[in-house]
Image (cartoon, rainbow, N blue to C red):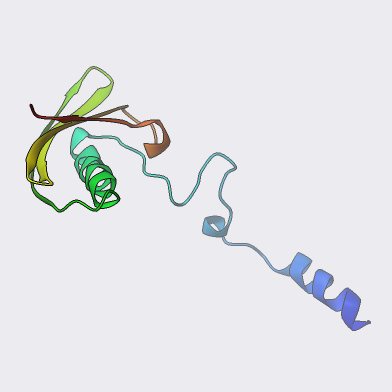
Length: 108
């Protein structure tokens, strides 16, 4: 058998493990939120990234989380650039981070 035909034949004969094949709707980098506590780190990372991207120092993150019906919520606060900032995040239970939302409101 020629080398050009050997590789495709070898690959066709190699069994694939179940974990090697992902369904088309799943992406390995997605986060699926099932509990409000799982939303807390995502919320913090997004808020901190926003301010760090603007060159501001970020510290003193605090947050609480809760669920209401099928919605997961995080109410957080951090200090960015010397001012207090309120952070709210929400997503539907079972949804991925693609559908999560964040609202950042500087304190007056």
